[in-house]
Length: 321
Length: 291
View 1 (cartoon, rainbow over the protein chains, first blue to last red):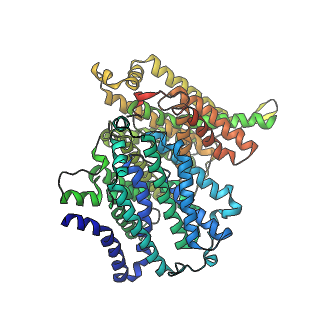
View 2: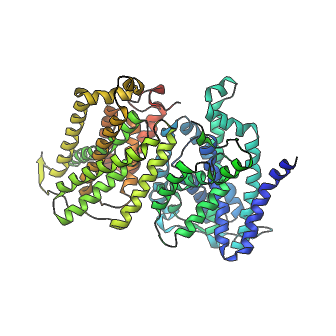
View 3: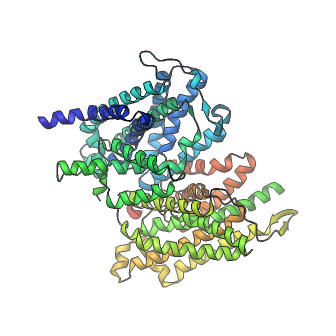
């Protein structure tokens, strides 16, 4: 009983921790906001990578898709940021539902590589093809067009911080619900042994499709929040070479766990924050970090912590062969 | 008419580069069952070494040789030190590992050569005339080199005992080991060869493009597209899809310039919808994808 209450409290504890950190270190507010947003993005990748065992080198495209759908809505069509977020979520559902059957059919490396190609097309589209709408590398600015939202005016960074934390809390609760439900177990079981799942009467294609849609929606949601936070978007967000970052963050936190993405985002962004004071382009570090984490520390921060609490319970997919 | 003829020749030279670089990915899939992404590092290094040697000694061919040697040497180190640990594991291990090696290499390249793109002078400016169309001799040379490489590789695979062991390894590596052949030595040999060819591809491509730290990213996508379109693990498939994609890039770009970038991906998507294993891909569990 005591254990259940403590597990119930975790999402509140983590988001509360972020709010506490914001008041302890007021100068780090932008960083903490980014942690909240990045967590959503990593959560999306975690569904693909941790739960279903799919590696995607194209995650940035979904992030930038969300950002651009929100930005285009705000810059040309409407003025309410909340509607823009809704538009981005709908965009995620649409892309997930339409692209899912094509992508999810491909296994293993095919999925990874086709996603990478998709990401390149996405980058090309926003950078050159739709340059009249997206303004290419100059970025699309819309901060002045945003109207105040009721109750909490999220145009201001300190209000946006609370908004991001609230979104994170809601997603945390939903994510944990997913992890505990049949769906979460079905994701992992499909990864473990698809044929057995089919024998039990599950439509494994549909399970993977749902997973893909959920991952896409989380990425586009994170993207739209990024866009609203900055007040502009540029194609950098969807750069191919950044595809490894989200995978590193997922691994760092502990893949296939509910709270792993949160710790992955903190650790990854923390390292980035510290290191970027010395070097500007830091591919080198991402590379070294990934190899070390993959070979020596593949349970991640949260995974290691969970191991210490209950010994013998495996949650990481990488442990399985 | 003359536009189309030169477009075809340009396409063939693009195919040649694509083919040289994609061999590394293709045999990596076929033989070792790993996704060999750091071939793009040898490709970039080959181009950068060519740049350095052209600017110091003036000889591009010396640069190409240097690119091949350094590519092979690095391939040997990476294969024996790092990739040995990921054989037989889940595909994502090799993908994430080799991509990290690539990123590390890109980081080092930026430290050594900086961020600015470097131009490399072509070794020969001679133009050949075919039916009144001027074609650069250098592009014809590239096509010739790639053609010789393909024939040489096929002869090596079909006529020598080591080549036959490689082909047997692609088919079933347990049986090869049961015959007393050290499969890991064959892996190393193949990997070194393929890395050297990727280095050669980079060196040959250097005069045609600007040499920049991110040149590997674009090539990565094109090489993937080539290998996926041809079917993972098939050398013939890689050769034919490189021929197709070279023309798509070149002729597509002549018709409408954005097609030269996105054309290959659309071809790949279309083929994958109808044939999920690519044009010459082996179906089923033979390549370890449906496990």
